[in-house]
Image (cartoon, rainbow, N blue to C red; front, side, top):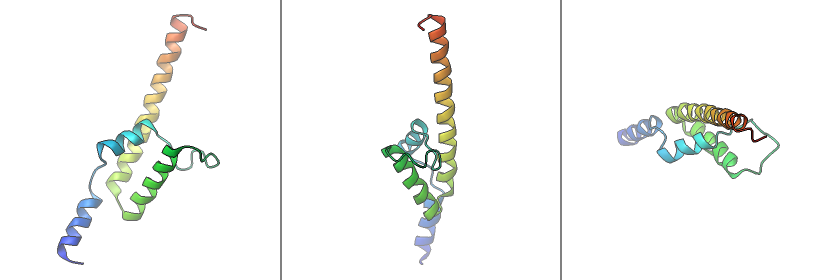
Length: 94
């Protein structure tokens, strides 16, 4: 390997997620072992393939950011659910 290839490899290893990748992990926070038997979701398959690619190529920064985006995504949906339940109770819709 040349010195330029080594620098490029280190640069890619430490590169952060793009905005599109981050938003995908945030809005569709599926974990690899979350539903083993249900393979119908394209997004779940996309997230799994991205995880495998990150691990294969050693993208440590992207792995950490993807995990944090998923956690924040779950928190976002939990808060959204709580707000919806509170609104339903407040307006006596049920």
